[in-house]
Length: 279
Image 1 (tube, rainbow, N blue to C red):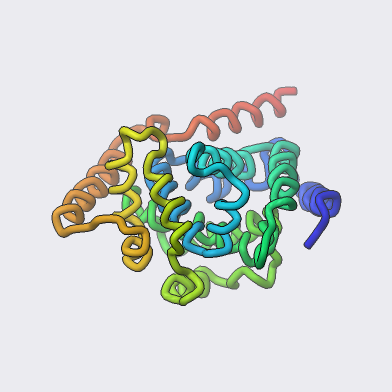
Image 2: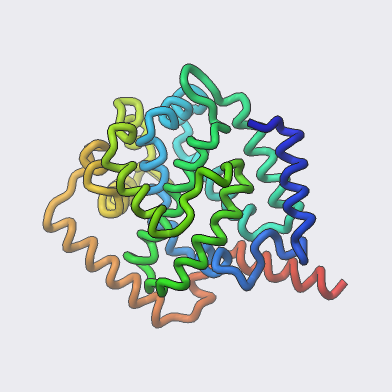
């Protein structure tokens, strides 16, 4: 694993190859911008977080290096903010966010785990990617096979930015999907008692009053094995309600202006690019 200084130098070397640093590592013409601008993605944030702590080493790190019982929202917000900066920020903004994360993770280590371990980073990245697929196949109009393939290829750069080695990333989207399915049913991914406690703390996000809805969304989007592991209730009646919610979401997104369901970070990024070009 690289030192913090080595990681910064590595990121700066990647940024030196970008034609328009103000547009960031991806830019407005990328699939990364197109997909991540959708506010509906907020419906699968809990899914990704639940899946992350289903890896015992990730759960151990969260338990030993965060105050999840008192501040369950802190890690979720930090993850979301960093992801938005990496995708929509300028190269300089992205690098600063990435270095802060990397430096913070240096101290997150214990018996059998280290937060900057590329294999653990890849699991966290994989949960974000897989949750993106679920969001678009559930709450948003789905993409074509070619569009998904293009997005997956762009994601390889994202994985490099957060410290994942190139050889750990499956070469194609089909390979990734096969890996993910195998990983979920494997003995490695299992809901430990501490993971369940972390998961139950997450259903209070963003506020305790929203816990029933948050738990419903998490249960409806998680794989069956993990839903049972976290003890989330699911019934045929809940499935019908979930299907209606998904259908309604797809209809609204398909028949409403784009600006109504676009994240503010997307518009701020466009304004930054326009300002830089005007100067």
